[in-house]
Image 1: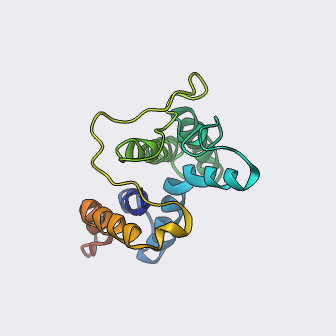
Image 2: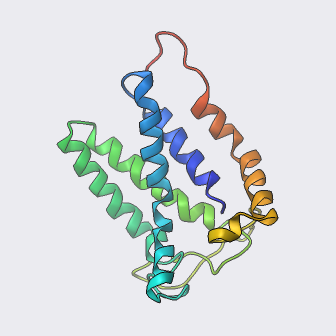
Length: 173
C-alpha cells in the first residue's frame, strides 16, 4: 500500500476517539496515523541484511495479530498511566494496528503478511486483492507510485472526509 489508507485509518480513529479541544485533534491524528503506519518499521531491516521473507522481514512479525495485541496492550498501559481510558485505548490501538496487515493482504503484490506469527511464518493474502501495491522507498516517487496514491486517495476518501469534516458547535471534541 502507498500508506494513505493507513494514515486515513489513523486520522479517522483520532476523530472517533477525540477528546479535548479542537487544537488537540491534529496531534492526535498524527499519533494515531504513526501507530497505524508502525508495522512498516520492518523495512528498516533491509539495511541490516534481513531478507523480505524472514520472520522479521517486511510484512513479517510486525504485521501479525500478536504484534497488534502486544502494542495495543502497551498503549493501554500508557493510557492508564496518563489517566486516559485504558481499555478503550488498548482496543482502539490493537484494532488500528491489526488494520494494517488486513489492508496489506488486499494488495496485488509482495509476499503476503505473516498474520499468525509466531505460531506460523506462513504469509497470507486475501482471496480478492483490489489494492495496487506501492513501490517501496524512492520508487514511490514515480508515475506508478502516483497512480497508487491517487487510487488510495479515492478509496479512502470517506475516512479522510470523516476525519477532516468540521465539527458542529457544542459537539464532543
